[in-house]
Image 1 (tube, one colour):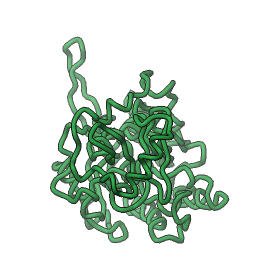
Image 2: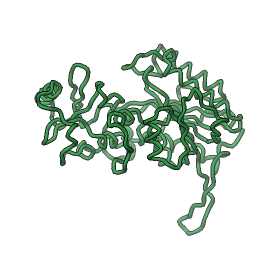
Image 3: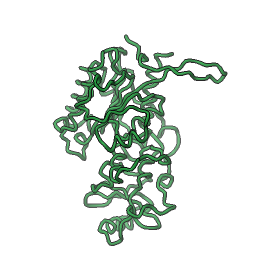
Image 4: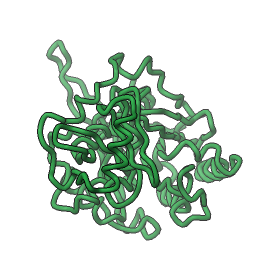
Length: 360
């Protein structure tokens, strides 16, 4: 079999005793990179991101702002070429491909939906690499319904496509995980990670879902008020006017709810209280005229969660300047589409352990 460490870069690390050793620097590439949630988590897991690609102009603007040193190809994935773009070989390929057509709340068009069909560009690009240069591991992220939707047909199509590309992959190579159960972030957000292993480098798929006690690091979930700042007035345009019909709906729900300290989510025709100190799943359509908009009450009124607050629930460092000058609705959309950084870090570390076993 091949060596899964083949495409690593080598760096010098100092041992506690003062001596120096060579330590491999693991490498990754990101398709459907968005604003960089996957890239952030993989960087925290110790990977060097060699390249990324996305077709969304605002996502690419935000990615370049956050990662100016990572080569980014802004192009429709259907027009992407390993040779033309000079994409270097990497040990891990990460791809959070579009989920709308697989979501229970979406169209459920599956691979008949052009967005869902973009998945097949992933094995196409993998096969453009020479067999020895293909990623040792492929990490895919989507919604859990992809596993079971269409009576299992969708997942079977993914499985067959990855196997035809030369990878070990089956249902046991998947990890269905909720942010609130695995990290200290109190967001009720369930996702699916799928890991395929190259038959060139492995005799079987060595991945198994990370075994994490409690909610990750052994700490309790962070209280809402450590992520939602009610101590200072928010942006004026984030507040609803008392005469607004949505204000009246939310105010009524808060009056009859468990607590107005909770987050309330504006749905299409009603308001839902999220209890137990949790934030509801943050989606791309919040803040851009769609439903699922999360609202809180503070001493100045009822307002939607700020961009910084949403970023914190997604695991981003809200203390950093996340966005350049792009429209506020697009900032919400990008955050709702992003892979939770903490989950990307966890699965990145699990995959790093698999790859590092080749260096022991």
